[in-house]
Length: 159
View 1 (tube, one colour):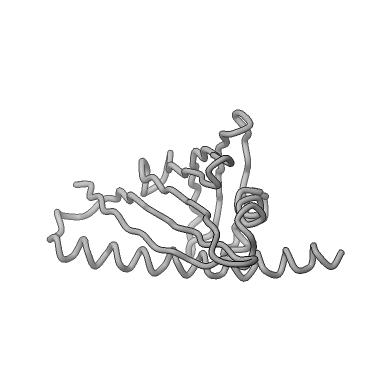
View 2: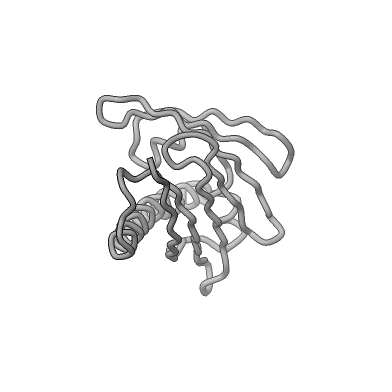
């Protein structure tokens, strides 16, 4: 089965200053799949202070899917990478960068290189359509995470 690759990018505003947004986004927890609206659990294996493996087991329709990813943290740059080790998108790699976006807000810039199988080699137009679709899906997931971030940080400030 041929493999295809495509790049995509999006930005999402986050309701927190850059340092707080970075800490929240990289505070990986076993219940993280729930924040994305999935039924499942995450296992976290710390390899080093700046490297970990996330293994998510989630329900996808009737099937259970397990994906493992290597995450490399770069707190000095408020960024991290996520490289798929297993699953249908094995070897795909994503870069997350958080920057200031005005008082009390920040911006997540996401750059992805997605690698996936295709039944047959698609046309350049079909690849571009797929890239736009994946970017929309991933940006929507990050907008949900931004709302969760806002709720979590508001409740933390009140406590």
